[in-house]
Length: 56
Image 1: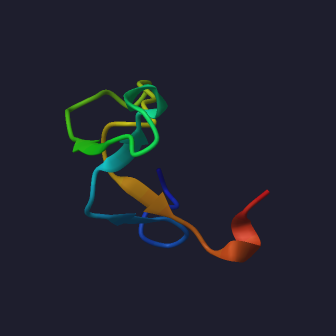
Image 2: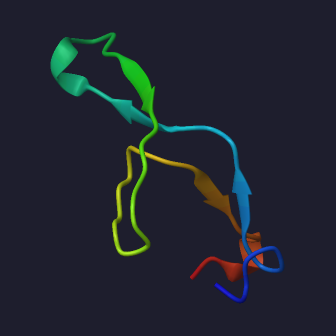
């Protein structure tokens, strides 16, 4: 997007997913994969960080 590098920052690190079905301790894992611009996944990829004032 035109705002990349100005308003949005991409930080290295996979998204974390918590499995409640594994009991009281559960498990967490990070996963990375490729995707298109149209693809949305909340458990795969990089995290985009924005300023607090940009959160709606």
